[in-house]
Image (cartoon, rainbow, N blue to C red; front, side):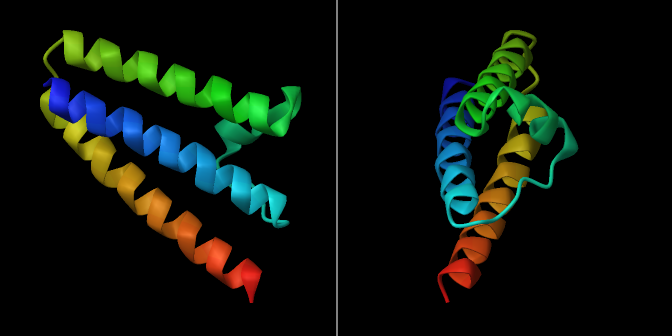
Length: 92
């Protein structure tokens, strides 16, 4: 379970970095929940959203919900790939 949780945390960090870069290049956050949290500031909002996600993941791990974390890892892997594709388009 710790390996799955560790992967989740790394994916959250990668999402934070790629989203921050996307915003810096002129992109936008499309997740309405994260976007609303970003009202406190773009980077601060992203950090708060990622901290909340990690806290939820820790809760899942403590409840032995490995399958939920595995699915979340797949989703966030896809989100990071999406972010990278947006960054590539913004750089062209």
